[in-house]
Length: 280
Image (cartoon, rainbow, N blue to C red):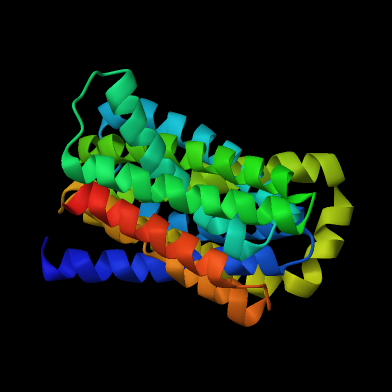
């Protein structure tokens, strides 16, 4: 992996944790995800104007990814409404690589390497610790755990689709721009149809920070897609999940969420497991 890919992926991880913290901070989660999506769509427009259109063979994957992102955003809102950032964020991010590896073994019959087996054990231990911690502290947490795990499944799905799609697009900026636009319009339009003028009124006090979150989201995923065209998908995926540590720390420092030994161990285990799975 080149230094440019390494830096881009690590910056993307920090930006990803930051925009998720913004989405969690805005009290009305419907408003927060609407503003984040609109901000991302606005960032996508210049890309469409400056970059060539994606190759025709990538459009089906682009459409599938946009749909998956809509479901992902809905599940993300639900998990943040029900749980703490320092619990739901590591669960969502940690579930994705675990699911991908297990499916490769069970469905495709691939033989896992020692690194993959070790990574699966570490991730499973970390996720189990997070689930156990949630059940002990708050009876409402199981719902948050379920939403976070479902979010992770969506992450696994759209990451795989986009990893293939952006390589077929032959226009990284064009692919990113169209994805941001399609994803950014669909969900806010649906939510506006449901809540109408009330959604606009509730968004006014937080529209600046919400749109900023959208810009950070677009930059984070754009950097990841760019990195996937220049580095191994597995390596990029592993480094990207360093955002788990950043997200957990943001939850502890800015949201004053409990970050005791259980969460420290769980967060480190998930991160180490992902690194072991892909890099050993």
